[in-house]
Structures are given as C-alpha cells and as structure tokens.
Length: 86
Image (tube, rainbow, N blue to C red):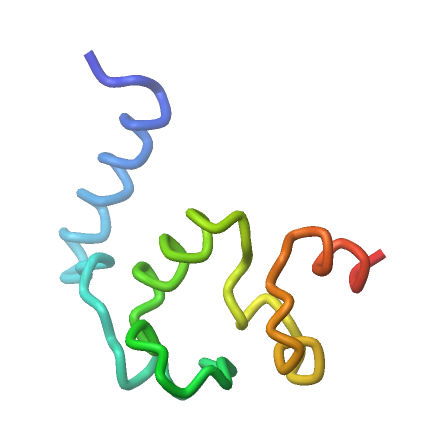
C-alpha cells in the first residue's frame, strides 16, 4: 500500500503523462540559461537533479538559491542563506 504522499505523487505523474508531459526528462539547455553557478569545472551545471543531490549531501543549497553576489562567495551553507534572507 502506498503512503498518502506517494499516492499524490503517482496521481500527479499519471496526470502529467496523460497530457504528454514527462517531468523526469532533463532539459539541460534550458536549465543552463537559468544556472548562475560560477564554479567552472562543475560537471553538474544544467543537471539540476544531480546538483541538488550533490549539495544536499553536503548540507548546502545550490547556487540558484542565491543572488549573483552571494553565489560568488561559494558559501552555499543553509546558515548563509538564512542570514541573507532574514
């Protein structure tokens, strides 16, 4: 038996698929247009699911959560984000 959250997710997925949408496809080119990460050797640029997973493991947020000046500090900590957004 699925949990209520899993049931909602499955229902939403089925609804999207009926409309011809597949939310699991990565659109790297579109994502890159909105990516403000300035870390040049980053292999995850434009692959948001990989970026979020990577930063979550480190207890951080991805660059896109910060404005350009804050992002350039490379302090992606949740504490930094909270201090900036009080």
